[in-house]
Length: 235
Image 1 (cartoon, one colour):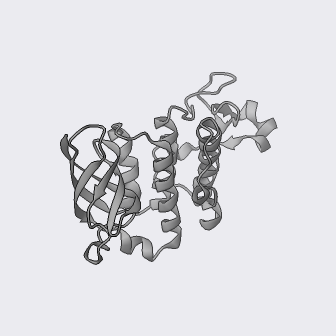
Image 2 (cartoon, one colour):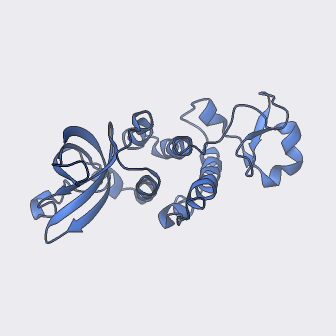
Image 3 (spheres, helix red, strand yellow):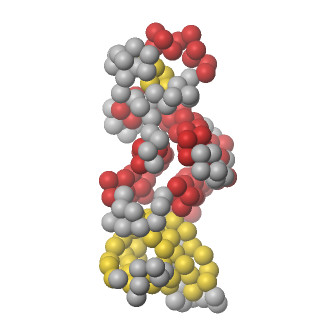
């Protein structure tokens, strides 16, 4: 088996004296793991960093064997993250979620753009929020923002129920507003310049549903770097 793809490095694990096993969120083949001989040698220190975008020639004699990677650097994002501890924290949270939630070797090309936007667009925090929202959708436990769960109305949607992950209109939700999440209008409107507090509201909600509807269901521990992210971002 042989193919070529590109993607973002989501984890690195040393193997032997100076080799490395890389996990890659790839464009056409989903989450893939591969072995790189000599990957931890001094000359490769800049290439193999979490978040870097690389091209890989992938090869395995048999499908059940681990892939061997022959990588080439497309773009290093290390300088972007070194100067921004908050963005580094978001990167760590993203990589932990990808490694924990996504199956290996399953194409997620439609979802890949939300990963890519986090790295390539200037409003990285907003795009991180979009990433988490659509991660829920990819996992099949997405939030239904289409209409009110009580009245079926599509007007005056103001809240999201933590029990059902469905929208609730202002009239029905207002008496219980302290127990509901705020409706993320900027997601529905594809508005990439929301107020910071709106982004915070969304991340509180997506974090809640990721834990409740995926991690707890699969008896997995919610990633610590995601659990601590809101505090690091001062949200």
